[in-house]
Image 1: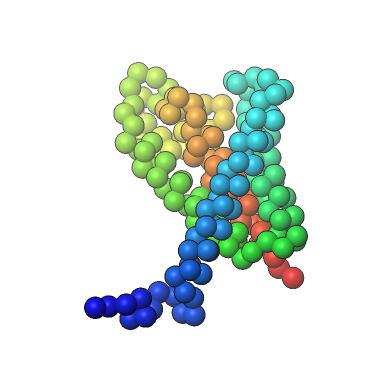
Image 2: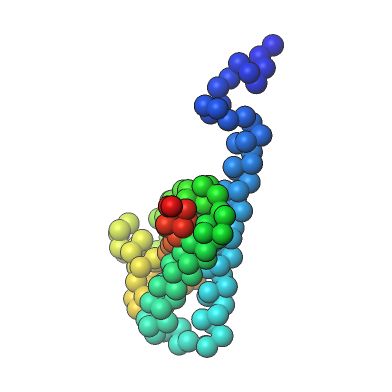
Length: 162
């Protein structure tokens, strides 16, 4: 019968260490998303015009900078190395949402006859001429969520660099 000693999981790390790192990874990913949601809620308190591009541009900037600043402070106060790798969650989320958007049917509306690149661009990155897909939530789900996670990872990287 094979035991856990027969398999090399990660050099020099036990299963408990890897489990501990996975929990920290999950915590940091969730914290970055919570910071993003708090930032969006704060912007929403000012009742911005939903058709204007300016609040979305400001939101994009703040969604990057707020998690970045928070993770920088957390790292300076004694954070751990795992926070640097939260960008992996961003990559997974962005990839999954891209596949989802590409599978959405286009019809009579803003993105009728859009190709794959145009569909993704207008869903995630166009503030004034959206695709009409995902009920207009493409920026929040496909851009802001990964951007918050990437900002969090960058802040942790600079905060842990001594």
